[in-house]
Length: 257
Image 1 (spheres, rainbow, N blue to C red):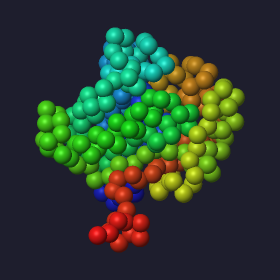
Image 2: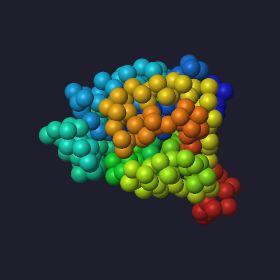
Image 3: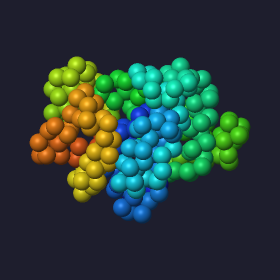
Image 4: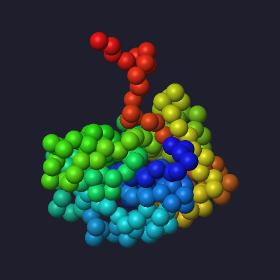
């Protein structure tokens, strides 16, 4: 994702705080370089208690105002009362909602969760990965979701992820609060970004999610209880897998006619 002119970046994540934890450094990096950045959050309603915290976090990162798909959280019915859970919602409808944001913002790069659901395998993370993968393709095809605006094809899709060698201190910390750790093989990672210059902004964005910081089990709360050197070690590197485009012409794994 290192690029001399810093392409525009749209992050698509499941919950408020995912954007800060998983791509806060890259969002701050791109904003500092003058690139356009934005965040789509799949769950929680605009009038929910976490929406103002998300707005504060995005202000720190320079990522505009919240873009909320408005679905309910798989594990927290207060996220969007009266709305379907993301995991139960019509796939085509959810894709259409996201396509509208992609076509409106017109990003060069889209970033989302990985296929395993980001360390803990949260079902909302997995579903957001699936929806984003399909929406990035659909956004460039005029015949799909025509109501969502003129087509726009992002140049690349990345999945934020955690390689086995990069889990480090997180593994025992998450296990202490009863969470599983689903890291990926190191070979799955295509890009690792040192976000040390933006780690202070990233941490301030994480702290903006005050409700999660105050709780014991969520990652913001776990990080807040750590000594600063340990916390910095955990959040100073962000790992990604480039999913689109895939193999290029001439790749030995490419089908031939």
